[in-house]
Image (cartoon, rainbow, N blue to C red):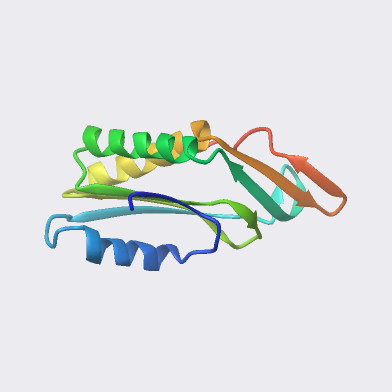
Amino acid sequence: MTVEIRERPFDPWQTVSEYRSTRLASGKSGASAVFVGTMRDFNEGDEVQAMVLEHYPGMTEQQLEDMRSEAVSKHELEDALVVHRVGTIYPGDDIVLVAAFSAHRKEALAACREMMETLKSTAPFWKKETLADGERWVERNTPG
């Protein structure tokens, strides 16, 4: 697994640890850059109680895999990992994990940031927030 869409909560640090111990060759990576995105309890000045995150099955995974493969090639990574939640998510829940593994920190950090920015701006996910007085679709992502 290098790209995974999950409907259930996950522990990003356990996921990274398991990935490193089972998928990466020992001694090849000198750097691991990790980004974990967590749901906030506010957006656009309103309190958010929950969010439903939808995706287009098949298309979303392919787009994320293309993004991951491009980062691995461009930044000469040993590997990269992307995990994203869908379904009902609550404040404090982890939503996304992006990890880049490289011989050196410069490449790992650059790849991790680039993948996260690409994911936030182009991946086919749709968010519907539950507020105290109703629901709304999120029209745009927060800037990076």
